[in-house]
Image 1 (cartoon, rainbow, N blue to C red):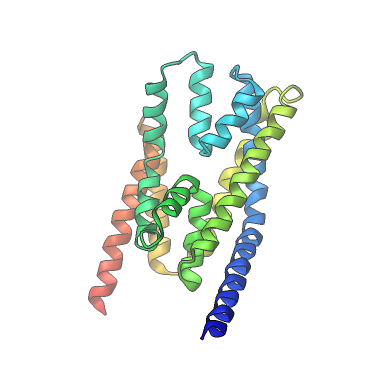
Image 2: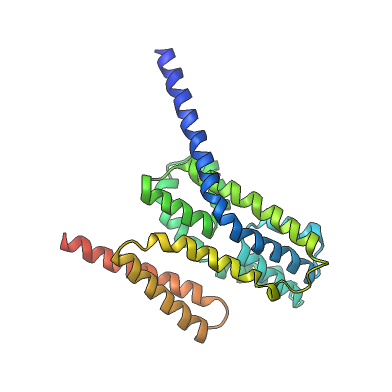
Length: 244
């Protein structure tokens, strides 16, 4: 019995290791979009008056690109009140509540320390890859862990590279580096538009995002688009289940 249990444990270990490497492999194409964004973050940190150590330390501790850009902008504008920066970045990252709620049925079954670690590393890219994996084969905590560790490492190192290049590139936006992240999200999105509901939800979200960007202040268009997509998706999903 012990031998059978030992063999089973070895097999589980091999499967988990294989899933981690598969996550790293799936993350590699996404890194091409993350690296320019991280470099831009590093350069802009220096432009705002932060030191190289402070800029990299922010990426290591915060690990949230959009929030870091906003915080750097606010620091560069002379806004030093920490509660203003925290509240602003909290509002921008409210979409993480929706992503967390989406993964909660799976993650809640894991040990609490692992839930905390996965919550810290949850970003848009890791959520998209994990959601794709759930759609293909179901949830796997090792896959999500592999994706998040890969993105965390590449984000920290690309920020470091940005601080090194900071003295040579004064304005990274002139190079179009800021378009790398939207292009990455488009690559992540397109494979998911495989049915009528996904397509409709994407269109609804895009319409609300554009209208919100035109008529609402700040980054509220992100929240509005997320909520509109959630309501529309729930409405159409319920309609399809009713027809069945």
